[in-house]
Amino acid sequence: MLNIDRALGDDRLMKAIIGLSASEFNKLVESFREEFQNEEQNRYETGVEQSTSVMSTL
Figure 1 (cartoon, one colour):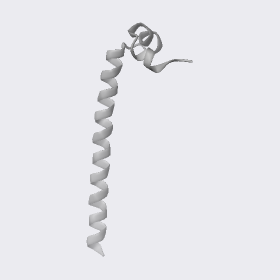
Figure 2 (cartoon, rainbow, N blue to C red; figure 1 turned 30 degrees about the vertical axis):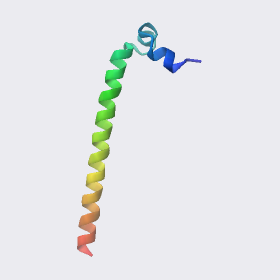
Figure 3 (tube, helix red, strand yellow; figure 1 turned 120 degrees about the vertical axis):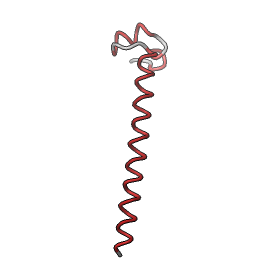
């Protein structure tokens, strides 16, 4: 079984498994995290706008 903490600390192992070094992988994770948070915020704002427009039609 693969130890994730060990893999994240071992560039050679990370390169063998996913083709990226640990630092490259961490940069990728951060960009996905930022995009996910932006999407989450956009969906929240869209939902608020939709519920506000529904309430105003009542």
